[in-house]
Structures are given as C-alpha cells and as structure tokens.
Length: 244
Image (cartoon, rainbow, N blue to C red; front, side):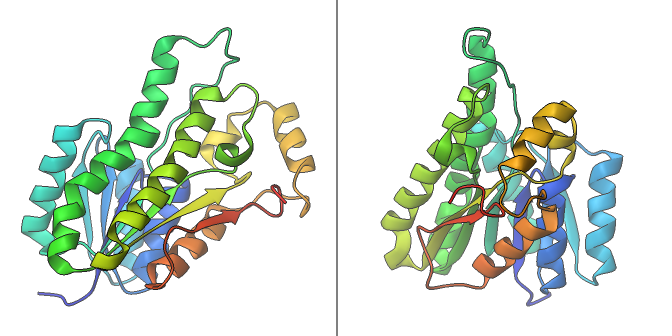
C-alpha cells in the first residue's frame, strides 16, 4: 500500500478542479476525482493524474445529495485507506437578475455550491478526527466578498462558504484539522468562456493585472494550503488584485 497522501477533489472533471487535482498529484498525492458521472472530461483528468506517476480514483457523486456523499466517501476509504485533503470545488451557476430568478435557480446553486461542501466535509469529518489531522480547502469566489449583479444565488453560496470555512476552522483547529477558503477572481474556464464577450471585457477591466487568471493560478494556492498545517480560517484571494 502506498504511503502517499490522498486528496479528494470535487468537480474535478475540468477547469479549476482539474488543475487542482493535477497539481496535487504533481506534489506527490494520489487523487480521488469526484464528478456527477463518468465522462471523457473525467477520464482526461484521470489520465493527467496518472501521467504524474500518482494513482487516480474516480467516484461518481452528486455532492448536493447528503446520503450519496456518505456512500461515496465510505467506498473510497475501502480502496484508499485514508483521505488527507478535501477540496470542495464543485460549483454551478444559474445567473439571472433577482427579478427573473426562480426559486429553483436559487436552490440548485445553494445545494451544490454550499450544501455540497457541507455534505462532503461532514462525510469525512469522523475520518479526519480519527486521524487527528485533515486539510479542507473550500473554493469560494471574490463574488462572495463583493457581490455581483445577476449572481445573487452564486454570491450567496460563495459567501456562505466563507462562513462555513471559518466555523469549521474554529471548531476543529485543536483536533489537527485545518480549513481554509480560496477566492478566485476572473479565471479562464469553460464557465467564464460561456459569458458574453462584453461581460468578459468588463470583468477583465476590473482586474488591475489586466488579464484573467488561469486555473493553474488557483491550483498553486491549493497546493500551498495543502502544505500549510498552521494556517486555518484564512480566505486567500487569487484575483489579480480585483478585490483590493
């Protein structure tokens, strides 16, 4: 059995999640890739992890389903023996102005982005407590700090993640468990690529570095936090100065 650490990354089929999964593998960790279903994108993430020489595991899971998260992590722990790092990255958007936003638009985003992080953390918490160690990294957003027109649901979910992060950090610091949040700014991903050109230009103009970030920029912060046992409750912005 490998003595390497194992990381679990949700929403790891593409974009920021994939970049984090691959970066942690390059740091010497085996990685469990979590996505709602198998797909060519998932298999590409698995391939990139295995190219680093580390083991990759895939487990399908709808993170908004509390019971499914428990089942998923239990099955993984039968295979990997231990999970040391949890990255709650899974996220969706349903962007609309509040007047046009439907209840389902709000509920779906909260269920995945915020409750999903609660579900996965809850599923692994006893395991971390048993090990007397664990690293939790929640991927929030600068939108959770400053709000954004047309994203009331998304901003609320990401602001909630920050509150969840700080509460977990306070509750379990004495038990060897650390919990931090990363707040990406305007990052080039499939999600932002679907935005209208005018909206992307407006976002970039708000970035002092005058360019979007890359998923690898966020991944670098995740690697840092995965190796920082005396940092907890921190909210680390990776935004090119967007929220100064």
